[in-house]
Image (cartoon, rainbow, N blue to C red; front, side, top):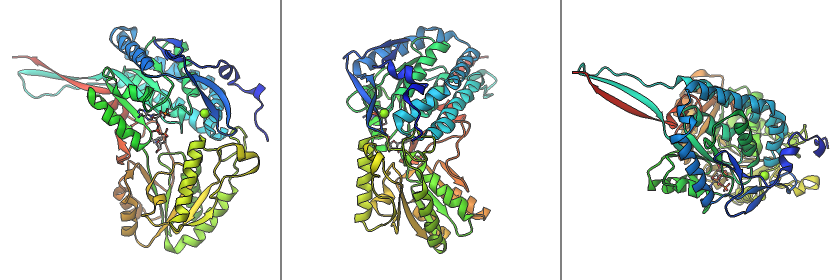
Length: 498
Ligand code: NAP
Ligand code: MG
């Protein structure tokens, strides 16, 4: 297997500096408890590094450092131009270490190196550059209400921000969180997912190198429930929590936020309808269905996990889909040829297998996959690309987020029917429509209750385009100018002119 050998690894030096520490107040420190945890390579189950296990005491320290940096540090006095410059420098630094980041991401998460290199890392860089530009463009307004008064508004940072992210796009999610928060002048505490802490820690090192003042960016690795994540969301001196992860966790975070009514924005799960009409370019739609569900091993919140096929094309489509799904090269993500890697953890692998079992019990028909691969891959957390046909929208595999490479195929007879079925789900993060009929495309785009709709494409992203959920997929929009709203608050100032 053409796996990069250990001696060639650009991230070798970083990995050898284990155990990795917490970044608090500009210093790398051990957890107060002295505890560490292991992060594993999901392709092999081997330990990659030990990482400090932050908990409440460390969160308390980090919040203090962030508060001090916000109220008293040089950050407060820095011009927006200088803030923007620092973000540009951080983007440049990531770019200069792009190989290293791509390897860290693939080793820690399992995703194919081609995706880390051509998607995660460049999109993270793009996000930092996009918000670097925003730093100098955050404006208030004047409103002419009454000649006796002058009124203007100030758009000010929210303050100390806690950011809790998942493991599916560790570096990119860190970028989506850090870049707008910093552009707006906040200070922050980032809590990466326990499964994938490494790229965020490397990012923290670069942030220190390029000159972010101490305490502006704090990174506390550790666990969520009853630990660092929960302490952050409960903390009385945190002004805002931005969270990406599971809907159930989002609800807990919202409850924990009530103590000081901190602002909360939530990017949660999805169960996206991917709708194909008989008049679509079928080959393009097959490709779209494949990337829609198998990109990142299906561990994508906007994965097209419910494929709706117009009845007349179902057989042809399924034949092509099966052939493509079975043709995907599954293997160690470090292999340049790998198209689908392992799931992030044994826990996720088992969770996905239990959904596959549920699908079979509920009477869905297994078209392909449905098992763990054997041989070389048996020691990693792999699941074969899986397609179920004959799925009914009430089945568990059509309603719950599996977060794995499992596609549920349903069929429909009319536009009205598919619009109704597509929306019969608790989530509303995204959806897609494949057709050559522009009226049908726009009509469905307006009918689908979701924050993103793709027409004749899937998984297209840009730092300038807002992303977020309807319904139980959360609220608040990340990316684009909308994220500026998440990280600022408005003050109106009245001046007597009479
Ligand atoms: P998760 O369990 O919700 O974890 C996400 C983050 O929250 C992790 O850092 C986790 O720490 C932390 N956490 C867990 N319990 C917490 C608590 N009680 N209080 C505070 N923090 C807590 O989700 P996941 O398993 O990492 O990711 C899978 C889910 O995330 C899927 O359902 C997927 O839909 C969703 N997701 C959504 C988006 C989106 O943009 N909408 C993106 C990615 C993933 P630990 O890692 O230590 O548990
Ligand atoms: Mg790992």
